[in-house]
View (cartoon, rainbow, N blue to C red):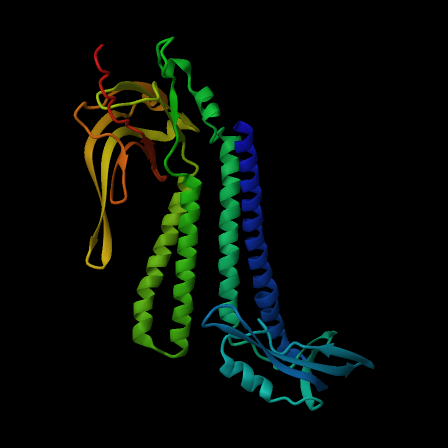
Length: 399
């Protein structure tokens, strides 16, 4: 089993690296080659020399990449002579070759005829660089945004994975339960010898890295899509809709600020929790032990709370609503003492007359432990650990 999990983890890591690295490479390559490099050439083309040329091929190629969107690429090949040598080029304009607006692509290519004599522009010190129309593709800004979004998502994914490795090797954080259990000092996870139960290291319900990556992806995609809509409205000078879109743009920027906040939380000390027994029922008592990986001295106040939460999902008209309401809350520890914050244990009692963990289509009962750590001038620790409260055992029949 351990071998299978190790192989699966290695495969998922390789797939993650390939996807994130591919996105990053495609995005950066597109930003540099299709937009930034051509943008510099466009600025320099004001000094290029006009040169006679002969158009040899004219075609507007189109490709469908969704039901409603097509990419139109005016392909115009031409030859020209410079310093006694003949050169061939198909650069029509600067920026991306294609455009999604056929009203731009077809009229632009219709100006030229095969075997016709026209004028192109050639770079004086590099005759291989030339252009037929000395202007930027009208869709250059949109293309830049697409590749920038791809590069941003790829960079976040790569950063997230590297941050995970850094946390593991620099701060000793590992997702392996066996490693976490070895990290717990025996004295801080008391259990009587000979008992069938053994300590249970509780895993965090959410990964800090995954949360940060998800927020970055959501923020970048939201902001990028809204920005594209806004650019289209700006071209049409639709000022009232632009003001409305600006509100959504501010929401996207707020999401990215929160993503940055979540990224800083990755480097907080990481709590490790352990229960003195694996099977917990209503009416049970168990020892909850805690310690931190990282510099626990930064934590000014520690609060650990046990909560029972009821989640309900129901339909209201044509829409569905989800509500979450705590029905039980027990403060396990609240301390400002550095010794208690760094590591310790407390007795936790589960009420006998309470509901066990439960999950169905429309409602659920979840038991969780929240670790809240106050840190000065830095995002606070807010980690959640779920525990399973088993249903009470049926009384055995008397002989």
